[in-house]
Image 1 (cartoon, rainbow, N blue to C red):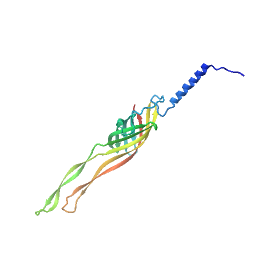
Image 2 (tube, rainbow, N blue to C red):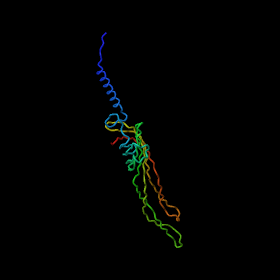
Image 3 (cartoon, rainbow, N blue to C red):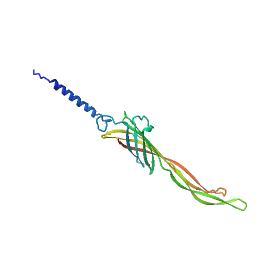
Image 4 (tube, helix red, strand yellow):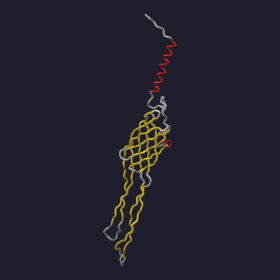
Length: 222
């Protein structure tokens, strides 16, 4: 029977080499939330982010926001940002709020915006009565003019996206929803058949709510 002697120094070195290799493997395998250098440590919850929002029915937007390490709700003042959205050709500008769910590795954002006042010029009629010799109204003469209708449109939306490491950065993608409110006004010319009531324009303002299903792509800026 042939026996071999193992050097204690050689055995210790081999064990240390295996331990270091195993440790490196575990650190490198931490792919869920590594830092920009890929050494297995976490990306911080604090950061600046940017996202592009798109839909298939006329919605396009950009949001930039900052998340804070102490944020627990989307209403925190420390995670404010800006949003610029185009819905059916109307621009909405407002704010965006975001927060990170570290265990789930997701990022959630809400945003809102308003459009600048849209002015629509509407016709008006000024009726001057025509009276007979007895003072009875027998008709009207009219002078025309215009009046301004000002509408303030708004947009609101939110999305949730999955964070993913893309060294040396962190990216996210997901879906959300948005709604835009459009204020419009229509008018008709009403001419009564009697001589007592003058003609007038009847205005009918309406609010149109348009929903959007939004796809999201974004990344960490720092």
